[in-house]
Image 1 (cartoon, helix red, strand yellow):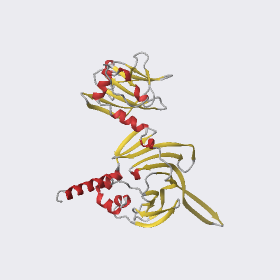
Image 2 (cartoon, helix red, strand yellow):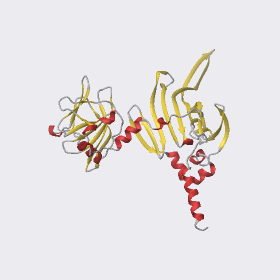
Image 3 (spheres, rainbow, N blue to C red):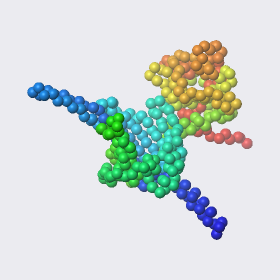
Image 4 (cartoon, helix red, strand yellow):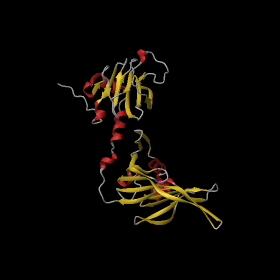
Length: 368
């Protein structure tokens, strides 16, 4: 019996830990939100010598948010669209500005305009894990994240009875079964007294019955980011030396045409290995890339946003050097009728062909 009790305790603790983070009471679903901002409208009148003026805050829909979750909130995905200009003037078409994914220990954020991915800790999961016992007792991520906060009332939103939590002097949060249905932040006086709303996020549609397309939890931009990050010095060396079937060598005379999200491998004139990804080509015909350089599998240089002007020669070993000898120049970026990269004195510039297709390199099979 003395042996079994600790074992059963360990099993129960492991099981509890495995199930620790399920912040919602609904397994899966979709919510559409409107993000409101407020503009100040002022008025003045003079009637019979009596002057009257006033101002009020008028809300307008600035952004639209589509949020999906699965596994009781253990995994979630969000798209955000800009729908109006400052002040409320509607855009001709809504413009997607970000995507976000919460999975495992990660909170991935994709900046669509700049084609950049950031990877941060899943903060809510982290705090619930740090306060595991309190989270288990309260059965509420809101009370766990904002310790000391308690329900102060209810409000009906989309026919759901949402609990209201006054998070602090600035913010109110309304949740139904752990799902945020409304969040309002306020302007305050220097003494902390609330004045009027600053911005709000309000659910306008909720669907907990339709099936979720699981593919949204594995977006292409994340596959590409993981593919790029998997290319360390050893992997680049292997591909350059032994996998000509997955690369295309840039021609020194004709160059090679670039497109957004292309991944290139290269060997510099100083025999450093490198990789780079085309983030975008802007309206000024500037090439924006991210790159890394390796020596003996050690990353020796890295830049997550490097801009190259049109018709510019680049010494990628020393990209910020004001003067470089012609022999040190690795490639030229040029836009005329086509967007092209021209090798110079480097050893090789190779397009990694899977960056335009599957975003994976199949294992090499030897022929017997």
